[in-house]
Length: 120
Image (tube, rainbow, N blue to C red; front, side, top):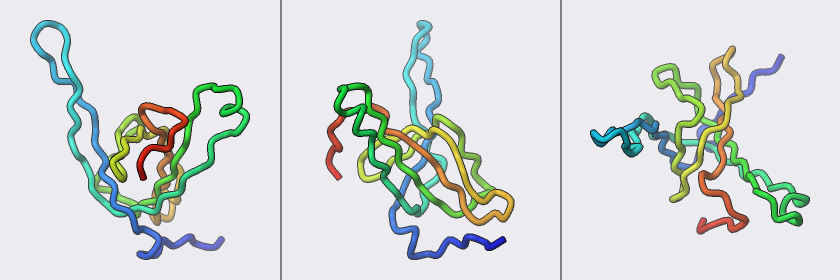
C-alpha cells in the first residue's frame, strides 16, 4: 500500500477553526461565542453543487474539502466552524489517513447557503 504524503506546497490556504460555545445571558437565553482552537495551513477543494438541485431551486449544499496535516494536539469536532477567505463553513465530517497519521480531510459546508458563491 502506497502512503499518501502531504507536501508543503499543497497546503497553501490559511484557515481558522473555531468552536461555538454557549454564553448564557442570565435570563434563560444566550448567544454563541466562537473560541479559536486552531489556525493552520490547508489545501482546499471546492466541489460543484448538483445541477439538478439548482434547476429545482432547492436548498443547495456546496461542500468544501480541506486537507490539513494530522494533528494530535487539537481535537476537531463535527459542527466546529472553519473560517476561510471571509466565509464561515460548518464541519460535516472527516476522512483521512488516521492510521498513517499523515493528514486529515475535513468536509464542510457554508452556514448560510445560497446559490451565490459570495466574494472569493
